[in-house]
View 1 (cartoon, rainbow, N blue to C red):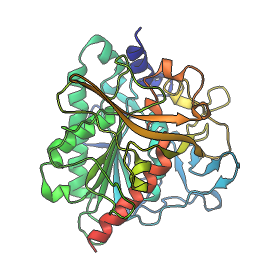
View 2: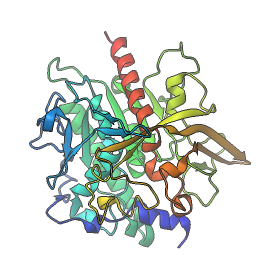
View 3: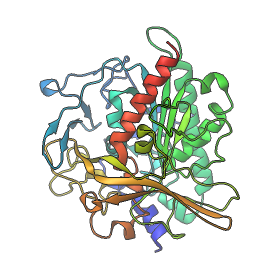
Length: 410
């Protein structure tokens, strides 16, 4: 099995380990959207009411999310190396939204009938949960191209099916849910997606956002990681750029990258294009916050999910993401996340040979703090932790862009 195929296997893995009771039937998604998280729905796993404030109080005032099977999880973090506990502030009527599409979680075709909600929730906890401080989270369930379809055929049709599901969910969201419950005007929205989710969102945006000025005006930013978004993906949505601290924070733009601890080769899955004068986008969120070029090395603000966040147990600390997170450290800390603000650095790099171009976020520093030995040889770079290597930067960036977008409409 080649590294690329093995990587696909791991990225698609472990759906079969979840109980059938924790699942959403998906045979009706073609007719109407299904939601993992949606503000105001009964027992919303993301714990946000219609206004985005906590739907249920947490113990001692902590903000928690809940796995569909019942386990509550704190979003607090343990800072390393000081071991100081950092309380996650509960959201209070956030004025903007986040629309999130998760990466590949389905393995052997189960998506035609049931999607394991706890498995999807674990990915949301690892990637998107902490954005809830800034926005209402909308996370649709969609049918995916599974590992079996990648291996045995039918991938293109399956990808198109998932993209149709995401587009249908977006259309419903824009028409019914994006309207502010108080002003009844359209709200600003941040698009969040990873891997297959980022690919599906890119397809949706080409149709529903990029060519429509009235919708495009409400796009705060699109964070599309590990999905090979290129300089030719959109006509009207540029890569986010800010080369001075005095420059205004850009909105209506795209943040994208694929992260590697070692420079990718052609055997690696992400970051490559053979199209002339086109390359995969790399926007370093830390550089954007600091107002410096993407090529300049910057400290990354890293958050890794813990056993608690992943709904793990002593025998399976990585929970339902055991295969996906093969090669990555998962702490047993008494918090949802381990915060490592000084372990990693990142800078965008680009290599061009003829018509072949590779672009990526080079991650350096104490990579052993987040990876186990051999992680790069097993997976395609740091793909499965694209969000985590710079999650603190990404959440601060979304907050800064949201504030800039809101100020422009005051």
